[in-house]
Length: 243
Image (tube, one colour):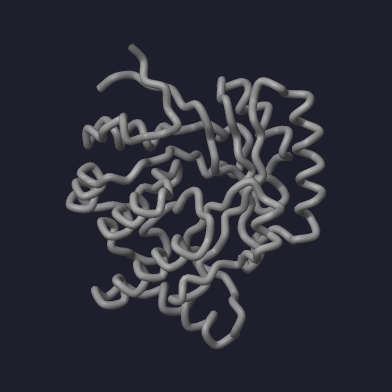
């Protein structure tokens, strides 16, 4: 396998949600690791424990604008890790939210609340149990509906919280120009799913999902995965391959 280095980390957290550092802490670490770009992507507004507040977005934007002048050699983005709320493909973002952010990543988390209490409880409760084939397809449908409805950049940690049809999701990512994340904390695919990913037309992104500044730009798990399964480097958009 050829050697490669990470060029951008588009999925990181700070104290604005459940991270342990400041935005500047994350930026400094990204600079130290030679990254060209970093994204600050706090948990979406309807995350039960760690959702960022809408009132904090202008403050975060101002801080990023300040830091961009101090660290001109790295591009700093403001995003959000939106939550898939139900099987209709609804996310916890509005048109105004979209206008205030540079990009959106999204996935399923274990504790979120939606527009209706009953539906929210059912969606979260159902995801605690093994996924039937029928429900797995419904979940996959909801991912695809979200990608078709919102301007998504990345789908994050697929198969976390509940299973999906990985092949269908990868095909939908390719169709909708959405990146498929290989997450730095969890890669949850079986051998058949990995082969499907390798043979898909999807493009992939490596993300740290860092909640600690020192973890920004860290991709040890993905490197092991790529080496073990001979995953094609040309499918990954945020790396530089050595000659």
